[in-house]
Length: 445
Image (cartoon, rainbow, N blue to C red; front, top):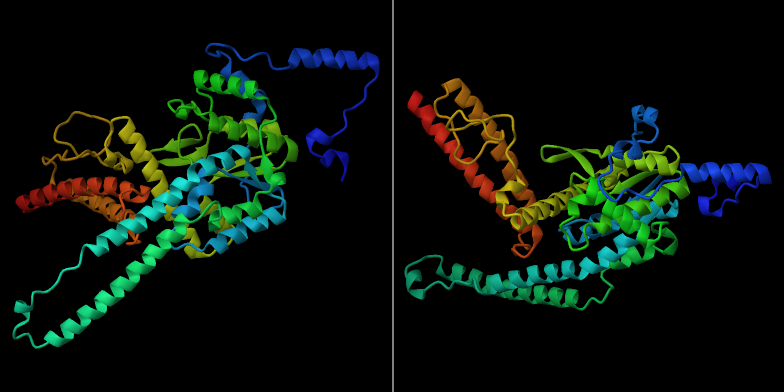
């Protein structure tokens, strides 16, 4: 391997003549970063975008199959397999194993630590869902009063079918109890953890190159100046230091590999993405610029896990299942955030801004709000609004079906069912508004 291809830590320093060396050292001292300002940084843009002419350079469209691209995983991606209802874990393992064989798979050490902090809670939720199912089925048996069967010609057939159902239910419940006991017997050897143990060996782990005091300095500076990532988590007990540690690990990876990076994450917050409505559209330009500077001009892409799997030609069933799990996880996070800030659970599925239907002419925030229907519109406009609302209702019901399609996982202790509860609130509001418009259209006929 040529010395220029070695990681930066292993490259030999250039030896300069004494007179030249002193001048270079002085120049480096003058150009080195001063201590980050203690207050608001009035020169934030100059600090973030040091080479102004480079802001006009595009970001490459990264292909995960290219050998010039490395892949790193976020905590939410690492925990996602615990939310899969029907996904094939072996197909996911095949994709990760390919990256590992090609020495292109990496994991921030902070992600591993956050994984172990949350893993057992995920397993406990799975066991609870099964126990809830057992409890529900055990108490739902309804016996037919023999008096009602007098004169019923299929009495014997019904009785036989009932006995068969009871026997099948008992067998099913017995196996569910065994499954719950099996999950509760795991001690760090569940299938997901076993998969990761073989993938994320020591050489695949990455961490910041900076000492802890420098990491804390970066955290505090980012909170004061809203520098991504992490400032959106400032209300957490750790003030969002997890995102900062992970990000500094990724920058170290860029410095040492000099390769493009796909960071697989379920993050949706505005300190990672530029958002359009409820959708994340672009990675924050500050992140793109920071990675470009650290990696010698390479590109950064933030990707969902299902997009990565699709581009790696994973089975379609797995891609769809992962996409549903990502939606449910994000809905649960938004629902929890809304609850913690005094909001309503229905805000996790916001109405589009395309139409404004309201009872008066006062402009609010552009959303179609509950029961705000301007019934003074003419029939053509009402019909247009009705069509939009019906399309929204159709899409919403599709989302609810995808979230709750596995009838085994009916427990409200699970995040996707809490998320669906909020979606159903929004569904009820839509139905009310549609009913009002339909009634008005009938009155106009």
